[in-house]
Amino acid sequence: MASDAGLAGPVKQKLIDTKERWAREGRLLTGESATPRHRRLPPGQRVTKDWPVLDLGVHPNVVPQDWQLTVGGLVDNPVTWRWDDLARQPKFSHVSDIHCVTAWSRYDNRWDGVSARHLLSVVRPRREAKFVAFRSYDGYATNLPIASFDDDDVLLATHWGGEALPRAHGGPVRVVVPKLYFWKSAKWVKHIWFADKDAKGFWEVRGYHNFGDPWKEQRYG
Ligand SMILES: Nc1nc2c(c(=O)[nH]1)N[C@H]1C(S)=C(S)[C@@H](COP(=O)(O)O)O[C@H]1N2
Ligand SMILES: [Mo]
Image 1 (spheres, helix red, strand yellow):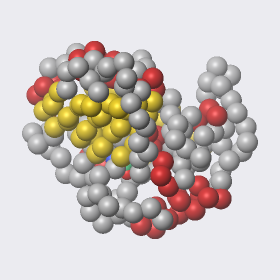
Image 2 (cartoon, rainbow, N blue to C red):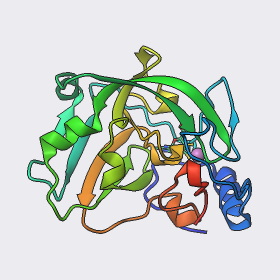
Image 3 (spheres, rainbow, N blue to C red):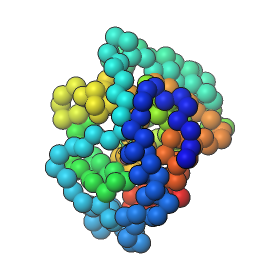
Image 4 (tube, helix red, strand yellow):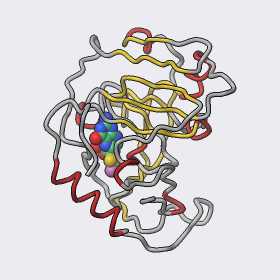
């Protein structure tokens, strides 16, 4: 079992142990592959109408006045955005489906916030930057290739369904990366770091796939 050093409080160790076991056993795998062109629901998923809360069990209480995001690493223009800075950025809105590795999917989530592409245009990653690492207020971490962040459906979300994003779902600000399993979408985001090397996050070191494409059923790896 990997160490939980760096997490911001008592985590749900049972949930973590169960999910690590699923990864070892290859639970939920169908062996199918699909493409979004032919069907809406990725293999092995079922649609839910409600929106489950899934995390390590620590819901940091970050009020907008205290929230700040630092974006740095291999970029020309590192920034620290407080809530007011974020509010001054161009607004972006997108409707997308959620696919969680625990097999639920939720259609038609309307997100509002600031697009990843706008953030990229502000910080300007250098040519050597190939990966993005996220770190959250609860100590959670996850990682993406820069190409997955640089997409037209990725955002820093402040609103869901027209309402302020609830704390349980990562408010005041979370990342949303709809094309990958939802563990790649960091709640309560605090740092975004660009690097030439990949650095695995919380679930990626616990048997979960490094990329996490639901259409290829990249649950574990
Ligand atoms: N900061 C943080 N982000 C996180 C997590 C977490 O524990 N902490 N869990 C991930 C996982 S495993 C999932 S499935 C989604 C769940 O988001 P939701 O609770 O809004 O459904 O958040 C992801 N982002
Ligand atoms: Mo998850």
